[in-house]
Length: 391
Image (cartoon, rainbow, N blue to C red; front, side, top):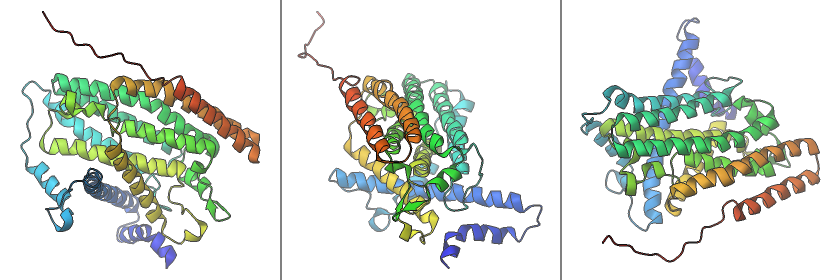
């Protein structure tokens, strides 16, 4: 019974495939998996938006959505209907074709990343050996859609927002890749299923998740910072800074096209949360050995939603950074620490078992953290403000 609950979606897929000829069964199986992904993650997007609006309302001591449906739970439905029925306005001078393709391209490449994520035991759409590489290739393609949106709008605010976004995403992609590299070094594979299997082991009831090692914990924090910046989330939401850019690269978008950008941002956030869960939190594996009877897909989606709650918490807590602070943080702090962590991971591997490697690796990372915080991120001292007037 427990095994059937764990594999209920796999069994349901095979049951539906049995009604088709054997020649068509592989195609039907892929279509079923694709349709499921396209339905499940937009539903999680609606739940995440509702949680965010209610959570931020609680943090800011105000009411969240509470009018549409019981306790406001139907607010995402109302938002979706509003987006579908609003007028689609395209600037006269805009490149209409590129303006239309930008949000569509963004959503397509974000959904393609889910093809290699193991969402449960035997629940991977495409189990390829270079799954991690494929995921990052799809993630890097979102920069093109952002630039397409800013350039095609023929709006200076949109173009400036797009250039900010591209600079930010390229700057934080480097530490993002380096933080994931240490996992590949330890596992010896870019297959995400094998990465989960390597962590699906237990000693004294506790899991062998990579986050519980010095290099894994450092890589997880660096990954979280980089993915927050890649997702344009607070405090890294400068490409959408309303105070100086109106709404950034999608200023000239309205109606359903704007909703597609909104969907792409949140589905992308779910996607990077799923990858972080896979790389550092054991993927679909249970947090304790006595809980392995719980279906694997529950653990995966539970960890993903926990990550979304952290994103919401950060948005309600931290103020927006300045552009120079954001770039300095990337190149003077996050990138050097990511490079050092690759060395620490190699040192961990060759020092052998024992407590010595724990002490050596932890000491190197802690010393480097404090040195870079003092030297690389040295605060600027501003003098008294002076006012000048035109004569």
